[in-house]
Image 1 (tube, rainbow, N blue to C red):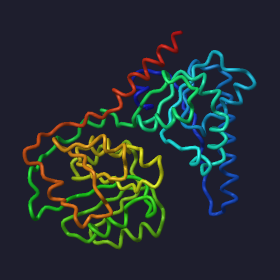
Image 2 (image 1 turned 90 degrees about the vertical axis):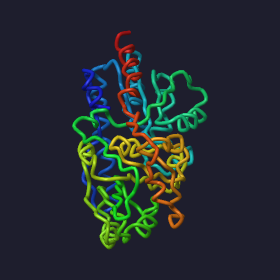
Image 3 (image 1 turned 180 degrees about the vertical axis):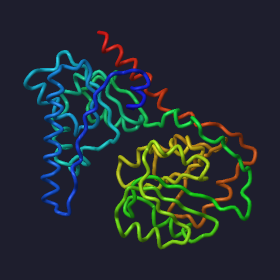
Image 4 (image 1 turned 30 degrees about the vertical axis):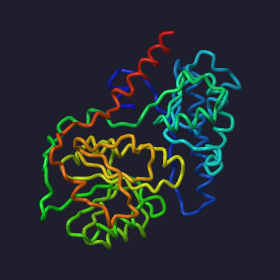
Length: 340
């Protein structure tokens, strides 16, 4: 979003938590987390003293400075914009951090004054509307997390291979967090990790030794560590398929269309997405390519990867999912609020 605001000459100030260094001590980490949030709150309060025309906050965890400021000084001349990357039910919130729970508990007065409230998809927005039936639904918006069209600049043109040749290696790509509990990681490694018809590359910030050692124990698996978001477009042309492996262990995950779907498509990769993601099924592509297909990762023995890769009779169609179209409505609302 920040790159879009800059491209449209929108003046903004970004306030985030410092993310102080994590230690091996659970007690120390809690103290560090509290200090981290306390510093963020002070910075935000100081900025609010300048009476900005518009304030855009993300997630309930970010709202506490606004609540304090409203209590003491009021927010009559400030337009509030809110966006949620995640959806947590009332039960889910009980498992979140203290600051996340605190924000959600006292957030309603801020939401009632908001000019804009958005979620990443219509399913999550509907759940949110049911949680807050007293809010004005005309303020609700869907704002998916798509990559920028800048990803298309200086990237190689798609090189179509209509049929999969016998000797060809299918280059699988996974970008993101790794876990055995939340992802079909073991299933993919077992099926493809030592199969010479496949090569799997993982980009992840994980430092979990067990996961890294497991990846490296497979013959055709590469672990390349983390990759900066702005460097992802440089992967265009180096892989064939992007993997989305979520098990769907929570309502938040089941009703999501992960940003990786749209980033893989922007790289001209086919996408093999877990069938447990209900919202993701709205984005199936099987009449053109790159494809976005749904895969049962619990039953990979019967998965016909050759049919999945087959592009005979299909035409290339560039991904339509870019943030510029999504953020246009937000920019209009910001302009309207700034000029009133």
